Length: 215
Image 1 (cartoon, rainbow, N blue to C red):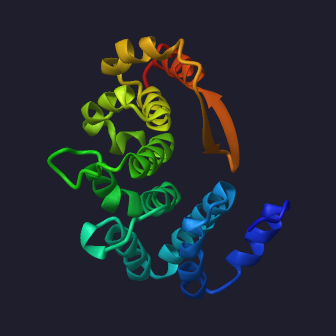
Image 2: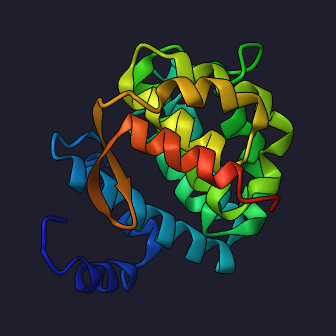
């Protein structure tokens, strides 16, 4: 997972039987190396979306396992689980239509709300990933996301700003404008690499996107 030529490593991993490769990859979600974690999320998304083409029920079982990891009764923490759910759904429309509401529920106070700010980062990254591909699946839940822009956690603020911009939520405009001078740098995984952005930059780009017109 640390190979510089990640593309070649992906090809090798994707040639393995999906059911055998997926479980070991879950262990990488807990890696202290952020890039290793995100690469594992990417590979799980590719493998499970491919599995869904052949065996939809097995793909659903993987999503259920990820959901269980986020359940307090599981006794675990659930690192990487919402991110992996989103990556799977972003790569398979059918699974997205079935499970997007579950991912949304983790941001809903009267749903399966996640209070832990570090896990909120994963939920918001996941919602942002899904919004990039299937924004229509999240539009009705738009009112849930702007409040996260006021989070005390910088990464949560940045991810919420990006999500609101992707969905062009006009209700978030005032909050986004307040963030444009926030120079706090945060790490984000996008386009297969780790990058650093200032929150003000993210907010500015979100506002520009909102001003660019409808979907």
